[in-house]
Amino acid sequence: MKHRFILAMAVLCASLLPIASCSDKSSNEACLHETTSNLDKGNYAAVAQSPCADHLQKGAAYFGLAGFNTTDVINKFIDANGTNSGGNSDLEIYLTSTIGVVTDTSLSNLDSSHKEYTSVAATDPEYKNAQFSLSLVDAIYALSVIKTIVVTGTSSTLINTGCDQNSNGKPDEIDSASCALYISANQNCASLNASGSVSVTQDVPGLTFAGKTGTYRGLVITVGGAGPQATCPAPNSYQKLLYQSGSNWFAVTQTPGPCTALNNGGSWPCPVEQNGAPLDLVQAIDTSLDSSISALNTSISSTTSNDVKQSIQDIKIQACPSGTCTSSDVAAYLQQY
Image (cartoon, rainbow, N blue to C red; front, side, top):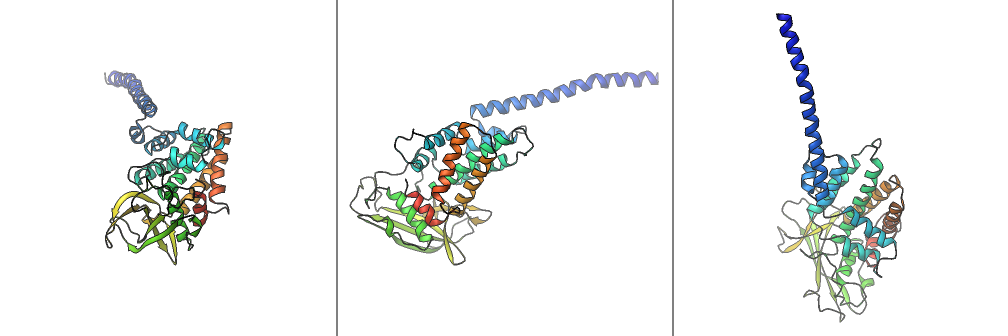
């Protein structure tokens, strides 16, 4: 009887095992199906938190959470490299119709997307696809950082092209951003003046902000002249932030804010910090563009990727002609708008 009981139990267990295995498989397949469905529907937060999403899916989800659509971004790079720009400069395409409002959250999501795509192993069959996606993420990160020093309004995504008081053919928002970069390079803003004046009208040192570890220098840059000004703010002034490292000043990546300075008072854009340190705007652009180009060099080979590659290489060449980005280089690049 004892042997029969053991045999019966063995048969029972054997009959139950396939059921449990099938249940596990069914549960995993359901999770995978739901994750794919959520990605298709744009439910990016659900994909980012999915226990069965792979690195490619999470990378795409964080890119979506940052406000970007892969197909859209590819088309913008192709437009910039082709004849569909409608007479607009490449930089105008990027800053006007590609990059929206840049926030701490959108930059953080782009960073998370970067980390997911770089986690795909070189032995993975999807590695080259991941590298192509990575190149888009990093290029968009660089362009987003560029836009942070141009547009500082809390809701506007567009450059105010109707405001050009100094009559140099460039929006005053662009000129003020270039001026801040020239100041950080220990240069003046005289090259931006046409029939008006671009100057630093306030220079406030020692700014600190709640939750931030850095000490900043606030610049108020005013653009004057008799050029188009119907849509200009009154006064036509723009706030920018620099931070000090050693004896040098650097432009910091900033988001709209406003952030109230703890010691000097007043509202300013909010500085972006990573790992407890100010995010150097120029260095972030340089690092991201280099990473983007490197990823493209190991990605899939197609006409589409070649067009994208050319556009991203053009950004690097134009923004950083010496190979490594400098503040004055990026200031000059903005003038291509």
